[in-house]
Amino acid sequence: MIAHPPLAPLTAALARLREAGIPHALGASGLCASLGLVDTVNDWDVTCEADLDTLAALFADQPHERFGNSGCHADHKLNLEGGGIELIARFAFFVESGVVRIPTIVTGEWNGVPVGSPEAWASAYWLMGALEDSERRRARAELLFGHLERAGADGATVRVLMAQPLPAALAARLEALPSRSR
Image (cartoon, rainbow, N blue to C red; front, side, top):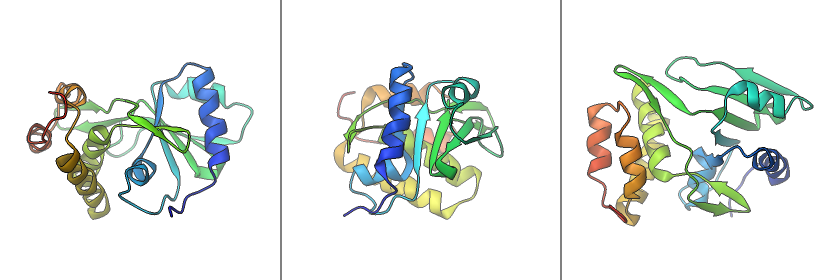
């Protein structure tokens, strides 16, 4: 059994994104839970292929909080439900060689919610672990990389990620993954 926040506010928020035609996908611990890698989700992290102003306008009638880029994060965020739902606008990270964009790629559905790419989130967690010097983020990256080593990685997603200015160690890690479709 997976412990998680209520799904109803999440599905209501995602319905607005879907109706507006904004690509979106559940990531972070929600994605990990959908893969059976964790049994607790503390909040819902959703990547969106839209800018922050578009997201804020879509949720103008609801209490929300906007966050600009900070630290290693080159993206922006809109928090709903007191932070229980975080909409990540154009997920990205500042790295030494530029900005790494993490694509929103839907790979399936869990509890009626579109879930994102384990390849993308393994990369994101790897970057956060390295850039924020976070053991917790490194552990999440290892969970997802372990899953990909067992299940195989999607070659098309790996190619999209490899087109980014990735640190060499992350690029090597992605290239070493067994492929389902390369």
